[in-house]
Each structure stands twice: as C-alpha cells, then as structure tokens.
Length: 207
Ligand code: GRF
Image (cartoon, rainbow, N blue to C red; front, side):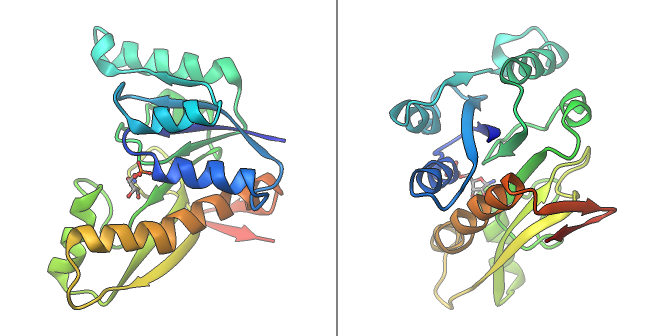
C-alpha cells in the first residue's frame, strides 16, 4: 500500500479528487496518511477532516526563520514516512532537505503544459492569464516529479485542454482543473502505486 502525504495551501480540489478516486477504486493500492497545509485556513484541511484523514498546519509564520520551518516540515513528514509526497496546490518552495530526503518521491500538479507557462511567477490564476495573453489555442496540466528547481523535474503525465474564444482566466482555470488536473493527478498516483513509473534521466518511462 503506497503511503501518501498531500501538501496543500488552498481549496483542495485536487486533494478531493485523490480522496474520491481512492474511495471509488480508481486509485488502487494507495492511502493518504497525512495532509499538510502551510495555511491554517485552507479549506483543504476541512476536506481532509471530512474524509477522516489527519490534517495539520505547518506555517512559516510559526517559526523564527525559514530554516526552522523547513526542518519542522521535514520532521512532520518523517513522522508518517510516506512513500510519496504529492504537492497539490502547495504554495511553498520545497525545502532542499525535503527534496534530498525524498528524491524521486515528490510529485507536483502544474496547471499548464510544461515547459510552457511554468517557473517563477507561474502559479494559480497567473498561469491562465499568461496563456490567454499569449493567445495559445491549447493549454492543459502536467504532473511531474519535483527536483530542486521550479517545475523542471521529469514529466509523468500531461493532458491538453482547448481554449475557448470567450475564456477568462477563471473559466479556463476551472476547465483545466475539471478536464485535466483532477484526471491526471489521481492517474499518476495509481501508476506510481503500481510501480509503473520509472525515471530515466530527464524523462519518465511508464510501463
Ligand atoms: C491548482 O490549479 C493547481 O494546478 C495549482 O494550484 C491549484 C490548487 O487548487 N498548483 P486546489 O487547492 O487543488 O483546489
């Protein structure tokens, strides 16, 4: 059984998708053992509580400096020894000590087709604003392994979503979530739980 820690910061719709897919059997052989938020008010923590999953807040505001926060976050994760850490809208740069301790075991969902619209400043609604500004006709979402840089780890799954003429950043964000994020993130977890994802250099192989 794959033990999964999910890190969140906001509404938790991706967390909810994982919870629902585990409950309906789409994700096999995986269990969410912990939800961690850097934001005490995150609705994602409510979602975890409703699903009976231990949820905690580890906030940088509660520590004297960033390094103390980084160490506390690592300690909390180590308490449950997850096999996989899922960043589901986690708005905190992953501390280097966590990247090192869990190398090859951290995945992230990004709301664009990496390498488009990713990297510094590309998060949340900004990603969709930039896609509309650039006038691309197709966007989507990417699940990738996390390395020490931003959005540069090996890609696991991607799913494309057409952009409509009358799209706003908000309507586009919602459609990318519904049609892409909530589909490929659970699928990636199921593939990893089945041991079907291998990292080969800068890419992955799915068997
Ligand atoms: C999603 O759009 C995700 O792609 C991005 O942050 C947002 C999180 O939304 N990383 P939610 O908290 O899962 O609803």
